[in-house]
Image (cartoon, rainbow, N blue to C red):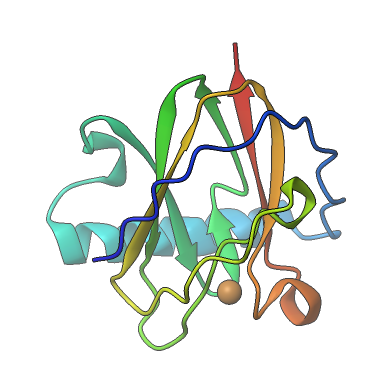
Length: 137
Ligand SMILES: [Cu+2]
């Protein structure tokens, strides 16, 4: 397990525009992703203590937009079976995370309110794998 605990710089970023995507399709993918999570960890992702969980599955971040209070640590979990993903807060000037292989995780704590758009390095261009973290004061 890989923990990337980075504190996001005090930058308010304009999130990249989300591609047109069918919300029903996203909901179906994210329901499947949650099933995978329960299969792997034995409990729902919402029951993790002290972190907000975002899943990486089928070229989708689940939820696509994660809304959290300031000071929250977000844990990304790859619940895919074969594909690796990353998180890249490109517009905040951060380097891309290491690739997360299936069942690997990365964490980042958000100490500054704002909207943080991010990309999956290998899939943002080809598969519109894009997400956003909204950090509330
Ligand atoms: Cu990806």
